[in-house]
Length: 330
Image (cartoon, rainbow, N blue to C red):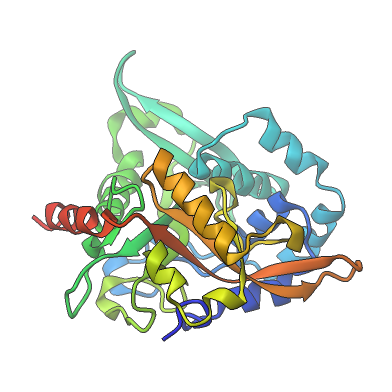
């Protein structure tokens, strides 16, 4: 099966381009993904006990279109505190949306018990519909690769590209610690109103060596989550469709939304392999690429759009990831 051409079950890129293809500003496109992409976790799954936030994006399209026409206010927020951290960047984007729509009470409120003891941080405190309480949202954007030979995958089998954590460890941290922050005695001094709900909003992409893998419902991952592939550079070059596409290496702050760009900014198959080799020589971290398809952007310029994406990993990454999975499951 060709990883490049396989639509990875959900064909999310096609849906995104159909709905948001008219958006040109990269920050606005990233925000559109945050607002309208499927959640990573299934809000209906029993294991989350109703603690998954559900967004109402029914009225976001017109607002996003107007923002794309005049994105200066969003750019000001992003440029006020430049960051190379994808999580912080995503927090800036979502915080802007919540503020513009009158839902945001406060963001990034650190809770301390004494001068040197930080207990935790409220990502977002939102007004509840009645105005008599606050809603705590814990927000995360995560990217994990499934590395396991198990017949039935588990959450700890999903490993971050930098091997620092697993999906299972992240969910445990959110559910068992971060969402309980309002119950800590030290938090009361920071809360002018009681917290009526604490919920997790988790967006992201999961990447598979075998795109046909289906996850057990008990895991609590949304069936329509955004999917990609992962493989080594040699395996990518052996794909039957490899020579027929053009590619883009996605910098970290462009990992959220499916990308679109002029064809002159893409890489041929040979140039991609050269770029991957150069990247791995400096840093052994996996590289996220987008597989591009030709598209008429409507301006007479030749524009290409992402049709699938995948992490290209160094040759020894799989062995290291397998060790990380074993550690996480002990």
